[in-house]
Image 1: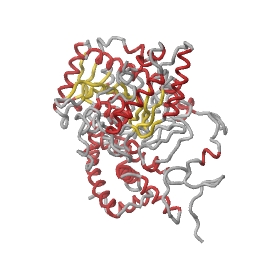
Image 2: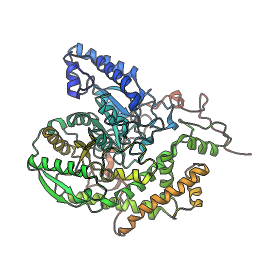
Image 3: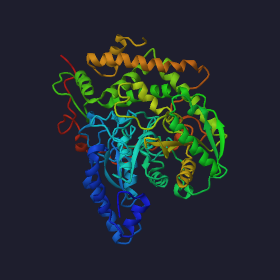
Length: 477
Length: 112
């Protein structure tokens, strides 16, 4: 049995039925990482001790004939923006190169409580700021489908690891598309839950009104299993919502016949690659054949989403990243004489170019004289973007769009042009701004065999419906 | 050019960044290019649109209540060990670049 190609259920069942041990699953995945990751670069830190301890716990449960929890023995990877007690957590930044968190992120703790085995920490753009993983302060990640191309970002390591069979499933974070876009580029499933669905306690903050945690997985069902394990109110995160968590797995198989699918012309305009357009249109056709009704909707403020996002996200980031001052943790510059010099030099040496650029833009947007023109203006346009979705969702159950305007681009192709890079998020930032859930699933490939992603957006706290539509499409394709 | 060299210096100062001369030149170019693109927001009349700071106040809260009462579920007694035990002193200091057994140490703040 090839233990590195299993889904969650297959892996758990194999361990439960003693056809494989959790230890063998861990060892096979580490062997694969050893063999493949030198050229891909998906992992930043391996947590072998922690993985072996957990695998042993699961194997003992299985030996005693106890029923395993939903992810019992399943090897997972965690994006390096989520704190792991005793395991280095860098956020892809030099400023946290030696940081060892004293506590666990809730999502990680819940995944482990559900039996998952944490293999290690996944590479990502520094502080999750990027769309290609080229902003990692350590090394870029390469797309396992084509090593000359990026895996997407910022959860590039999380996406590449799943695509290369180096983890069954991973956790990523999504602030402007950072789960869905890399899932699309690497040919897998990426789910961003509703804002407030999953606790962010222990997530290194980028933009607090936009940050989400969610899974990258081989199948829609795997994403549903992980969401079920990590979702729900957490008293440690005041923004986690008091909303009941449904049984996503039971909901998956419900029929999609008669469901109303919104299609917005604003997501099929200028800049959309022709091959991507054809693949997405053909996916929509297939959903129609499955009994869904296609309903045209309008999301007229979509062209304003990127500028809105880059004001709000950078403003929040400039505030969140003020904590990196070289006092309590993180890098401190050597040979400094005053406190002020220590702050400046530590931040100068610790942050990379894109992080500095965003801190500068955000600080500018919040500064006296510009607050109304930029930050407040963006918050108002955010209202208009949210209203677009509210109105559309009065007519439809879900909205289907391309995940990204193009398939994976080449390393270096956009790295000298920040604005061109920002436009890679054009179809994903809207959901972050409105706080609605979205999933990206594979829907074919280009002539060059690069994966294409279909995005399905849903109503607030209605992940069950987007998962159901995604599952129906996956089963039919 | 919206952003001038003086703006870059001023904002870097606010953000506690020094930036090299080269970084400042790059920042001037990039900020202007991004803000030019951002200017398209001015095509929209938002004079009667309320700002949206977050989505948490709309979902999963008691809509019949107002203000912070909506978030009653998220509040708790203000006690020292309310949700979890505080970090032991040595764990809290373990990541510090410079500390003694009690405190974080920093360069002298007050010149005399």
